Structure formats: C-alpha cells, structure tokens
Amino acid sequence: MNLERIIRHLSGGRAKVRRAFPSRTLEAIERTIRATEVRHDGQIRFAVEAALDLSPLLAGQTARERAIEVFSNLRVWDTEHNNGVLIYLLLADRDVEIVADRGIHAKLGKDIWEEICREMEAAFSNGKFEEGVLAGIHAVGEHLVQHFPARSGKPNEMADSPVVL
Image (cartoon, rainbow, N blue to C red):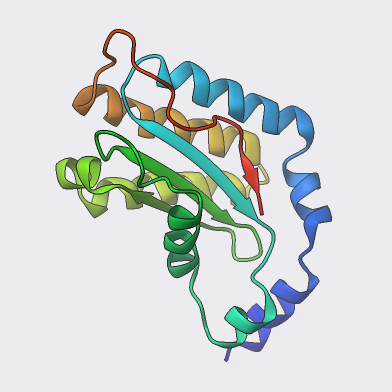
C-alpha cells in the first residue's frame, strides 16, 4: 500500500472537483463535446472523480481499472458502431485514462490514447484543468473524425454533459 496515495484520496473530496471544475468549466466541456460530435459519428463522455472509495483504494485499484468500471457503468460501450470513448480523470492521482470501445480502439490502439492522456496530465500539473480537458476532447474528436466521419441524421446516443462521480 502506498500511504501517500491513501492520504491523497482520503483528503480529496468533491470540493476539490468543484475548484478544478466549476460550473462554467463543466458547461464548456459539454459545449465542446457537443460541437466536436457534430463532426464525427463517435460518442465522447468525460467523467471526473475526486478520489476512490476506501475499499477499492485499499485493494489497490488503479485509475485504469476504475476507468474501465466507469466505462461500463456509463454504458459507453453501448453505441451502434462501437465507437464510444470515455475520458476519465481521477483527480486525487491526476491520472487521466481513456477507454475506447473496440470499434475505435482497433483503428488506433493504445499509444494514441496514452499520448492524449499525457498531454492532458501536463496541463493539469500546471493547474489548467479546463484547457487540458478541452484539448483532450478535441484530440479524441480529430481521431473520430478521421475514422468515423459524421453521417447524415446520426443520433446523439449519449449525453454530452460531464459526469462528476
């Protein structure tokens, strides 16, 4: 067990999320997702979580494992063309994970997602949460435009609003 990580998670609450992501930032994220999705047929979700609950934390759950769990809980996998993408931020660790459904992941692979995550984390380390998330959404969107261009009359299969866990 990493005592420093446990302390970070136990001291991280929803107030930290509100400071990093005030309502105007959450609204900007929603607008950006909506605007990006006009250009492609994919679905982007953004979720931020202040910290892990005690039980998963003590069990050593990683941000990646939690992101996969959130991907499933939000049903990001439930799109017609298997092209949903979750951008997940575990604020206590400042760890970004991108989980992509098999339709888009097969076309891009892990390295592309990792690069976007690292760029977002660099912005977060400078306190630029809004800029980091918006840049990440745009980067994911550009890949979706390339592989899943917008089609006429496509439905919006998922809510565009950010999820605060």
